[in-house]
Image (cartoon, rainbow, N blue to C red; front, side, top):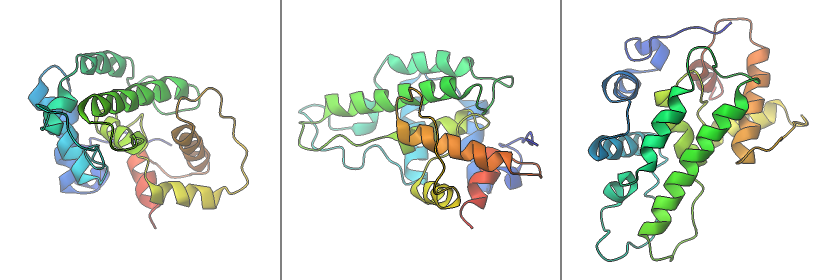
Length: 205
């Protein structure tokens, strides 16, 4: 059974005081993406806190584009992300039924970050895949929709379901799509109350 958590007040649900700060920032204090400084700060704080900084390996900047975070936030496409997130609410949380919508929003952010990074650099680095950063960034804005993707949780799920055949459908980023479907399998086996954050934490142990 899904547990409804007050992430920015409940340290236990958020798994630590530091996370309550990030949840409060993204859910209550500054959820929108209209102010470049706010977008820049949210990307920096979440990316650095969760070892998924899109700046890492971003290559050499073109002349006049030295500040990575300002350049990343300098896109009107961030406002489109707000419209995407508004369509994800309490009625369509993480589930098989709504997974295509969730994956579409995740793919939108992955491509936005990749595009801004590519516009900034001189092409001296291979483009990174930003699926981990996007999952973490989106999780703090919609904690009941986006499971956090990282290598530890992914390996744990693959070990738990090693031979499971899953339909990929038309997932824009199959690695995250498979990860989400494995999470759904894991959740289906739970008897106790759960949140995506609690399941993620349990996969570490």
